[in-house]
Amino acid sequence: MFRNGELGHPCGMASLAQKIEAENRMRELLEESGLPQPDHVEYGYTCIRLFFNQTKQVMVIDIDEPEDPEAAVNVDASG
Image 1: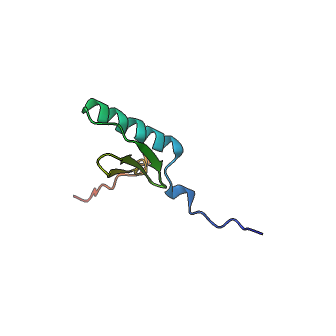
Image 2: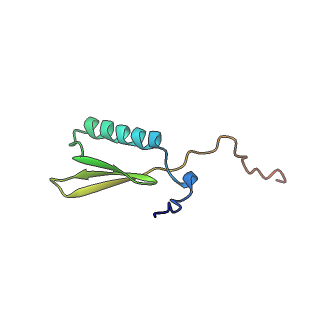
Image 3: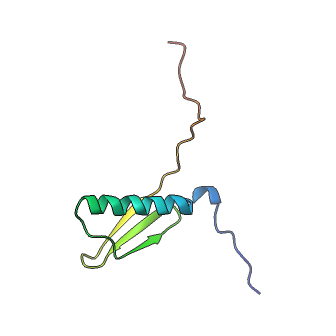
């Protein structure tokens, strides 16, 4: 019998939508720059990896967590 182990905290992972958006943005940037498209793309936990076979290169794009719009700004009012 197999048991499912803990796969990590879901808050530490980028969402699928974030990964798709990052891939699309990178593809647009490459096209606008006249560079070749990746041969394939892998989605990691907090990044995407674009593989270019001909040049044997990999581009890793880290996906940061979005800023919390409700986070208080630390302002020192004492002067």
